[in-house]
Image (tube, rainbow, N blue to C red; front, side, top):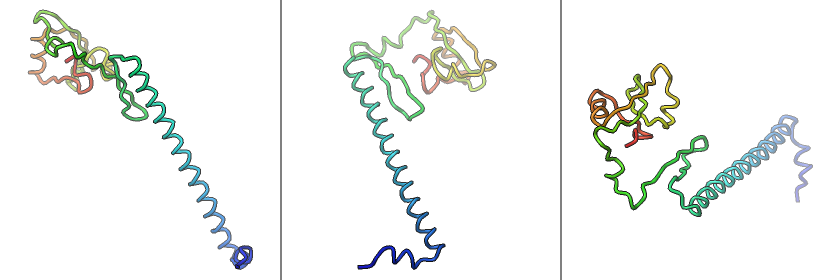
Length: 150
C-alpha cells in the first residue's frame, strides 16, 4: 500500500500548492452548490405555501410566480360571469385611463406600468367607448399587462 504522505513529500512545492488549491476550490464549489440547492428548496416551499393558502381561502385573486424579482396578481373571471357582461359598458359611460403619450400605450390607473410612467409622458383621460376606439385608430394600443381594463 502506498503511503499518501510519501506521495505528497515527493511533490515539488509548486505541485503541493496546486494540489492544496484544487482541494480548497473543490470544497468551496461544493458549499456553493449546497447553498444554491437549499435556496431553491426554500423558494419552492414558499411558492407552495402561497398556492396552498390561495386554495384554502378560495380567493378570486391569484398570485403567479414569474421570477424571483416579480410577482404578478391576476384576477380570474368568476365562472358565473359572462365575459360580455365584463366588457359591456354604456357608450356614454366614461372610464378612466392613463395614457403614455410617448409610447402610445393605454393603461388602467392601477397598472404598474402606468404608475412607473414618467410624469411628462403621463396623461389621465376619461373616455367613452367611442373615444377609446378613436384613440386606437390614432395609433394607441392597450397595455400588454393590464389590457387597459379590457
